[in-house]
Length: 421
Image (cartoon, rainbow, N blue to C red; front, side):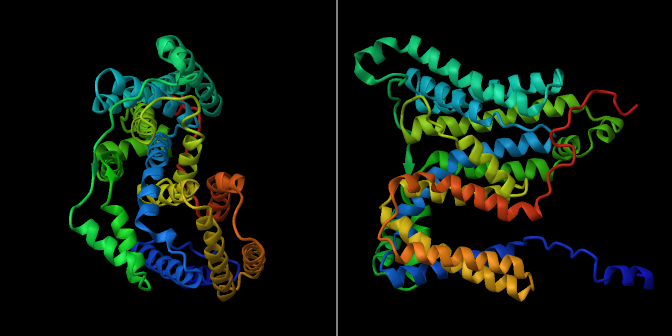
């Protein structure tokens, strides 16, 4: 490196290079979080946040969010913004419940993916072929598909609905199997029951991973891993991602940009449909209006939090799934979580002080003080606030992660064939 280059690199006004989040750092953060949860559990005598039941519920809640986020990842890596994931998830809930009721729940999963894929095909035709703005098309998909599903459900199952089942509810489908690792599950549960510092918390987390797990949870995890290898370790993935970075250059190298965009958006819809089918076949065993409850949008937030990468997406889905599952737990768990977040904000303020980011340190300290005040002046969190927790966490996480995001360069741009000539 020349002297001039070195001088520029060390110039006071030069922007600092952003450090990449490596796996050792991620594992260190997870270990620190476990220590924090264990310490708070010891202080409050409430270990519910790391219990096996909480972890199992969090995994269950993370699946539809993760599948919606994975769908968004495929679509946006090819340069197509897909906010229509919510509507595609609705198609998956309806088609999944329909297939599960008429045939079996395994066929229902496939039907849900096909339903979501058809929604993806509609979005691809509108955006890729006709060049309509991606946001406008996504909004249209979110308005159109739920209306069609609700209408068809009323007509198709009118006898069942009129018999007193309730409006827009389909007949129940048979359940999918759950997996529990014998011996290991019971052994970890025994260790968890002792409430030993950190050891029981780790046992609770591990126990939640091997106890009463739906097969769809394993399928979702496998799809995230397969997506990583397909998009980052194959020629197909390189070509698809090039369509989201520079479609004109990709076309000049012989890549059929339209084909890859179509494949990506249809696959995106299929993954969202699988997430929807999970809601109607595993979480509820039937289709009902409003079943997705905004999970398609939260999935997009998880994808953005994960910086358009499968590993980060999985972490984001786990975070949002954890907060979403708190709605099903004891309200005292959310109250304890306030103390956990308050202490975490103190540590974050100390980190900002170490890095001489004084403004961020002050903001973190003020937020921490407010959370401490909230915790010590209340005994529980009101139900409406518990329900709003996933959406609040979504906003907070996106605001904190916004400084390190790097979306595909051509994401959301209208591409016409031959425009680079």
